[in-house]
Image (cartoon, rainbow, N blue to C red; front, top):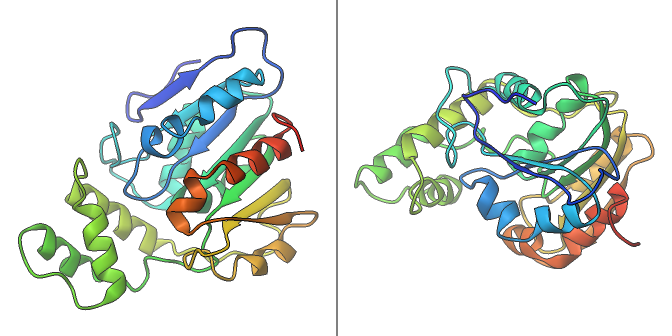
Amino acid sequence: MTLPASLAVRRFAPSGPPAGPPVLLLHGFASDGHTDWVSTGWPGALTAAGRPVLVPDLPGHGSSPVLAGTTPKAVTGELALAVGEVSEVDVVGYSLGARLAWELPALLPVRRLVLGGLSPHEPFGAVDVEAALAFAGGGKLPADPLTAAIARMITAPGRDPAALAQCIEGLRREPFVPRAGTVAVSTRFVAGRDDPVSAGIETLVPLVPGSDLVLVPGDHGGALRGASFRTAALAFLGAGRE
């Protein structure tokens, strides 16, 4: 499988013959594939169950450069190129990764979809990007709590504030407006019981026929790192025990 040079993708293969389709793992905003997935043991658990795994860094994150297009349409197009020609693929996304994964069944032969930590609304719509960038340049922390939180995220060690700001602008140009009929594949929603980001995620379940919602311990970061999320996802993908 040939991967495009524009997107950094980690690949993991099982030791024996594949026991199912590859699994695409999509990380959250201001993170990267290693932080969200590799360091928390996901590729090891999946390959032990016989599943090939793809872990990309989203544009402007980790080892992937900023691309000319940062809208969800442009990014999901890059992700489809990264997966390449497959008969089936399972997708697990968290936070921003889940928002992008919502669009992928239109581009890829998705078999099953796990959407974790997903906000039912566009989370970046009210962010003052200029104020966040001003903080990154040495200015004051924005007074708005949401913008302040984003400002801290884009200035965390190893992050590129300008690249992440460009990512936000692209997302704002195509805000997340979930509609019935967009997703028609087997889907499991997962959210932390104490996660304010995914508050209202239960309203998405009726939009996807046959989907379910699993609540796990933790806030937004805690749910991602906790074993309960991985267990719920792997069981749904057929890569673990119920």
